[in-house]
Length: 297
Image (tube, rainbow, N blue to C red; front, side, top):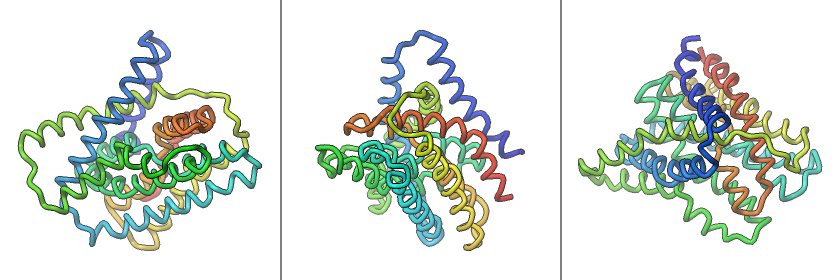
């Protein structure tokens, strides 16, 4: 109960974003501009700084990073079955495939901070940073197979991949962070999470895509139940505890990233089906995330 109360304000911000987008005439252009600002500027600044200045202890984080990769591969494997199980069109299956394993980093870092404080944010940033390249590799790779798009070019210009790799490189090179740069990145990063949560809420909408209800239920089940169950099993089998255990389960329980819709549209996929997955998954996760985190107690 205590954990649920701590993370509740993050979900309230999402609902505030939804209410603002539906109840006030800001215009879609305003929200699209905010999404681009968060995606291309604010969030990359947060990721880069969080990773660049953190004390990387791969000995202690290695287990949860390995678990994270295994959980994501499981999500990919299960998500890829939908096309054959429910006879989904290849382009629709390729678009929604990513919904089974991509995760909303805005919600993840915000909840990690609320539940576990600054240490939780640091561990989450490192775990998410290690997961982002693999997530984008899988998502872009599947869509690129059905679109005339250069796979490596898509990865190279993804701001989350670039900022993550840059942060790791800065950290491993042991470069000092100049004070003015650190303060600038901190100011940008501190505004990333509230702006990102508002943008997540504003983007929620149900659209009529080409995926069947059964296929939608499958992808949602994989993301909100199968992968967090796998994370919970990893925690029990490996004896993980404390913040690391909580962040791992949180990572697995997160709904699909809003950027999945942007990627699907940009690469000629079925954007409406992805939008529906994101909306239903995000709203459902407001109930499932507290339950999964509480299951660790």
